[in-house]
Image 1 (cartoon, rainbow, N blue to C red):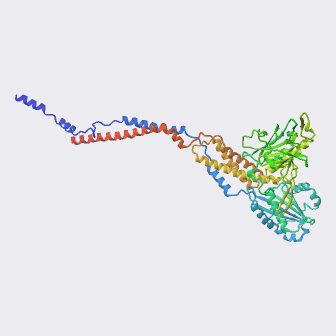
Image 2: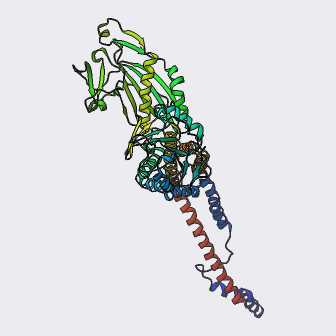
Image 3: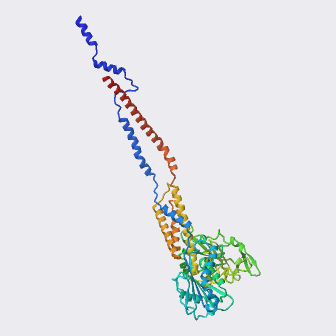
Length: 612
């Protein structure tokens, strides 16, 4: 019995280690502790999904990226600031030649003051005629005195200007007054083709007034008895500023912004022959001969200002919109200037058939209107009651109309069959002389051969090309200045538009056009600073055309670009819930892993404590 009791006592007492484990288990709390180390599988899977999402984000942004060619914004701002801050001034060179001083000793003593007097008067005229494309104060004045045997040049004389002393000696100035064109060509042979505006004053000591004539080149002459130096200086200054610089334009006439030139630097001259009623007569013309003989020199002269093309057509059944009345005194049907706004029948006159009608080229319509037998002859009555000599009128920026009355139209009015005729060459020449005068008016120039200024009336000689050289210089300066301003404005607008729309498509073609436009604008400024008027007009035309092409590029006008807010609103319903779930899962898993790691650390701490 004793042995059995000992054995049972021995078996009922646990070992020392088991007692320690039991004591540790009694302190275990599964809410704050865990016996196993937390695994990394769930955390790795969650982070893998999260980083996969992050890696796909650049691909998504790349797929919705908008291509934008880099634009020279700094150069565009520099050009705009230069145009706004610095006035666009051309250098002009003026030269006065005074011939035959022996007739007036008072003028001989005051001749040295001519340059100063002319400069003072020019400042007064320049203040009243300051607009884009003028010389303003950027000019030099040279004075040469030719007494026949010797020539004297004064202090401010331009050393590059040479006058052949005694070149006008022996000329009969009485015949010169009658043969102005011959004297004009003779002066051109003396002065040469320099870009200097010259006024030759010949003191004949005869007569009581001065005769002023402006040639078709870059010079003018004043012949007569010079009695007062101040009046002479004022006349010469007015010629320099009002005629040579301003182009003899009247105040309020067409300036550069109203020139009939398209934004692309092109003009289409559309000549239309309109037969109002082909049942009476049908007229045709030979426009090809006109183009070769009459228009070709004019188109060549205007080449630096605009790229001009010619079109023509013959239309039938084209009555006018206005009414006319019979006048017994003039034995004609009369329409007045009050009827001009209603003369053009836009419903029946289908003039805009040109391929350039839908583009940015400017189309000038020149219409020859052949009236019907019921209103023939048809004549225009001016506001003063006189009948117009040209029987035509212009519409600014649109074109001109000439009414052509068939010969003996009243006798042929009762013809049973329509008469088919062709306008003769002489009649075509007369019509196109009117068209040339209308074209000059559309460019803001005078259609008459006289300029009435403050110091008197000057005669303006006409050129075979329709435009004189000094008129072309004035048009080139004004048009180049306006083109450069428009180029800066257009590029500035494009720059602000591109920077305000980050999602806007900018193709390489637009960037190339902008860079070429800036280069052409820089070339315009360089040519202008050197006084090369025609070259500056050509480069300015290219600068504006390229700027307009860039601004109105089809990709710029596209609606495929959108703002970042719009992109966020489109893509957020798809990606925002997904990204939100992924981010919350990552945060939750990291928090869980940290919490489980703290539980395991707590259990390890208790075990170490009991083991010690």
